[in-house]
Amino acid sequence: MGGQDKGWAGRGGFADNPDVQSLTADGHRAPISYLDAGWLYVLAGIALLAAVVILPAMDELAEVRLQRDRALVIEQHKSLRLKSYETYLGAVEREDPALVMALAASQLNQIPQGRTLIVDFPETRMLGTADASVFGALEPAPARLPERQKVDSILERWTSSDTLRPWLMVGGAVCVFIGMLPRAKA
Image 1 (cartoon, rainbow, N blue to C red):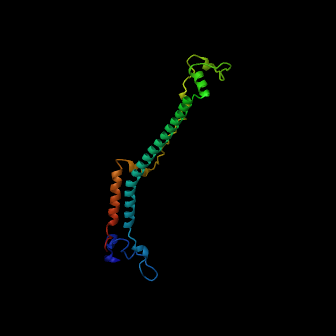
Image 2 (image 1 turned 90 degrees about the vertical axis):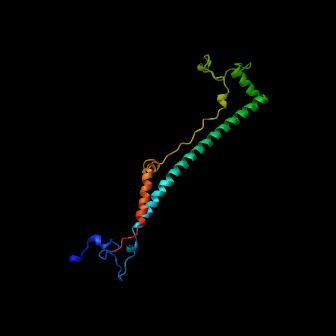
Image 3 (image 1 turned 135 degrees about the horizontal axis):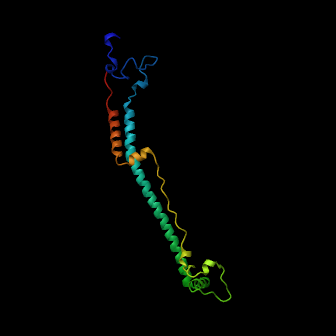
């Protein structure tokens, strides 16, 4: 060792250091010693840059799909409502006897001779509490709009944050730059 020991700084790193190199049984360098650790930085940098670009775009896509699904549910509800009103209008135009009697009973408060009120609740007998409108029965059930279930992860929060996103871009670019640097010479 003596005066020729240059220390770790003078040896040029692990891959070029003869004290640390892995040798196979026949004296050749092991395949692992040819691996450049810079590729790990390149892959990590590319993955980080891809996440910064792709995750916000996927978030916007999910939001647009949710709006589309909501619009489809609303359209379906409106078409059911329109169909119900068209059926009612057709029955009025045909002067359907059952509908005419029901309208006379509800709108004009007239019951045909020989018939009595089927449902006789105390609250319907009170003045002004009975609903004489036919439109409540024509309305379909309320539409259930789909809800968005957002993924809550640290990477998702960081890539969607306006303050952290530029730093992630810089970090990814630095990782790619470090990974592209050439190996140190001995």
